[in-house]
Structures are given as C-alpha cells and as structure tokens.
Amino acid sequence: MARQHYDKPTRALLKDMLLTWGLKPGQVFTTSRAVEWFAKNYPLLKPGSIRAHLVQAATNDRSRLHHSATNETDDLLFKVDSGQYRLYEPGKDPAPIHEMVVGDVARQEADAAVDEEQEDEEAAPGSSEFLLEKDLQRYLAENLECIEPGLRLYEDEGIRGIEFEAGGGRRIDILALDQSNAFVVLELKVSRGYDRVVGQLLRYMNWVRRELAEPRQRVRGIIVCRLISEDLKLACASIRDVELCEYKLSVTVYKVPQLELPN
Image (tube, rainbow, N blue to C red):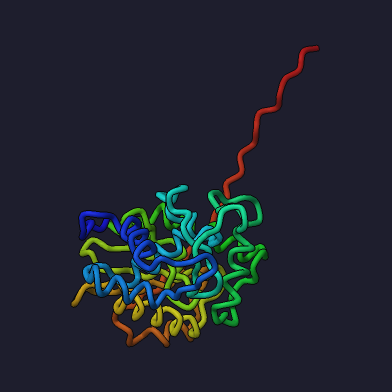
C-alpha cells in the first residue's frame, strides 16, 4: 500500500478543498480544477490519485464500490458528467451507491461507454461475453500471482486498482505493481486479442507514467486474452514493456451420490 504523504489522508484533504472553495449547491467544478488545487497545496500527491479519490467521493459513480474503504463519510459529491462534479445534496439526489446489486455491473459499463471510445471487439454491456470479462477481472484481481509471482493489486489509501479511473471516462481493467514496484497495466479481453488493443494499452500506460508514476518508475503492460491473434503478436513484437498472456477456463463435473430414501 502506498504511504501517506501528509498528516491527513487524501480523502480528508479533499474535504478541506471543498470547504476552502465554499461551493454553493449546484455549483459545478472540474477534475482539472481539483488537480490544480492539490498540485498547489499538496504537490506530493499524484493527479491520478486525486482522480481516483473524486470517484470514491461521487455518490452516483458505481466504480467507487471497487474501493473497499468507501463508506458514508465519502458521500461528498455528485458526478454531473465526465470530469464534472458538484456537492451531493441529500434528499434531492438519489441515495448514495454503497453496494452492488444484480444488474448494476452491466449498467455501470453502459454509463461509462457514453464517455469512452469503444474498441470494435468490445463486449456489449449486459452480454454474456461482457459478464464473463467482469468475472475474469474479479478473479485475476484476487489471484494476480497466477500471472507472475509477486504481482499485487495497486492500493493507495483505500483506492484499489480495479476499474481505475484514467481520465475521460476511461478505466484501466486492473492496475497492479510487480516485485520491483513497477506499475503493471492489465488489459483484459475474453475473446480474441486484436492489434487494436495495443493502442488502448499504450494510452493507459502513458497515462500512468504521467499521472501516477514516480520519475524513472517503470510502467509495464500485459494483455490477457483467450486467444492472442497473429496480428497482435506482430504489433507487440518490438514493444519491450508489453507482454501477452492467454488464459484457459476449465470446468470439472462431479457426480453426486443418489439420496437413499426409506422404504
């Protein structure tokens, strides 16, 4: 887990920012304004961390549920649009999202799809392929060492590297750290991996370099697909910090002994 740079945790500093601004109900501010305020007052905090804490504080952003430390004290903001927030107004706004219910995962991706450029091979929200991708994401996030020894999920003051906000409504499937403390960006595809996914991964890797990584901290990328296409292998052949992985699913069926009923 990342160390705390200041006497107060970032979520408390976020509250200080809102008090300093003296926002009125309905007054909208942008992510950029928040990042600039932190850069001026708390320069050791990375812009990517600030963005993640805004997500955690947004009562209507379902991605806040990926951060296990989220609770009622984080119910501060209402997300108006991509990169735009206002103060949360109890009684007027919908109740804060504190738990995931059936169907919410699909709706979350549908909302995000409005802001994010979708790749041609993206699974449609709510489809069986999409749900399988979410299952794969959850499994790998909890079992990263099956990809490589020492790989662990990125965490920063309760912010976890699952569906990690990467600006413009885009989200990194899994953000991790390896044994040498290098960032590892994982992009997951349940079907074939095409060469178009390389651009998506490189965009995320460079975002992490700019917004999260320390100077000279390495950033790597891993694409995980059911089947790696020849085009994808060729596209990645000369990219040193990108690796390719295929996964296999297996199901074992056991017979259950027949229940013996009395005569």
